[in-house]
Image (cartoon, rainbow, N blue to C red; front, side):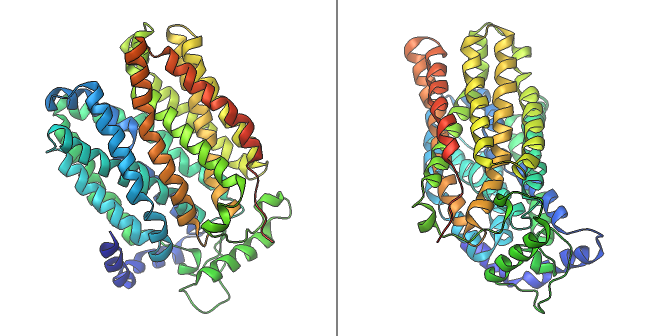
Length: 454
């Protein structure tokens, strides 16, 4: 990936022509176009997301001759192992820029999807899961989340909400598209379709149209206004200075959390409790959400819910997540983010506990609405927190450290819930355990306040 990123930098002048031309012609900030590219990147992460992988699981079990526990173990091990190389993605994006790193990740993810069509046996699918989780759910999601943060400060919450809506739409649409492809052709064709879309669609779009910073096209954070400096190749200190300039012009009616943030290193961030609170929030949220979604069809079948009704969970979950994201982003621009984060975890806990508490179809609706809404709000708030709390200079490294823990946590959820179900005969005890783990995080999140360096 380092080699690909280095080659991308060598051809930077060629890649810059289209984006420079568009930035000059658009009547608004090029940052709004960056939001569209971030949405595309969110969709590009789909092959490594649980909602997409879950569509393939019945066919992988049958064709590869694997039991449910064997496939869950491969998924868990692949996710755990994916967290190791993921620690390099953030520092690489800080050094080479998001564009070069994202081009490399997109290319490798597309190749992985094509190779997945030929997977066979336990170790073959383990390798596929490792790469899909590392490149899709890990690296691509991390980079997409940082794209918008590099272009906005005052409007960051609102723009992140719009960007995050892309992931909600993907959650609703991608499983349906993949299911139709599998029904009409086979699961191998569905994997090839994913790979082709990444290599022929997303990769050239990022390479030709994404720019790392507003100063690359002579603009400022949040606005089209031109830079006074004569260079179009900014340093990160220039970027931070632009942040202060843009913020000073537009924050008179906004809360202090929108003010320019002093750039922090990872060593500085880990010395404050907020970093570890966010790490705990992300790890438990990922593990529990992945576990429930991975086993969702079996969970609702045990509760007597028909297959048609249980499949409604995905679009209902997506709609609830979308509404919360679109509302949560603007709220993050106006209200204390630690209060919003606590509210999000209250909804997440309520969603998990709604499954054993409610009966029949109501369990589907309760989980989808509450957990989907909580996830949407949590995504919108945390996506805004990173740049607001820690600045942009080392954003990739700081987010990458927590995201590595998050990816590792997500690998444990399916196995924990499945193991409890195997030992007790149903998923109820596991769901009570998961819900109970989320409740303390409601209180803990109230202390996730911004660290002021002295």
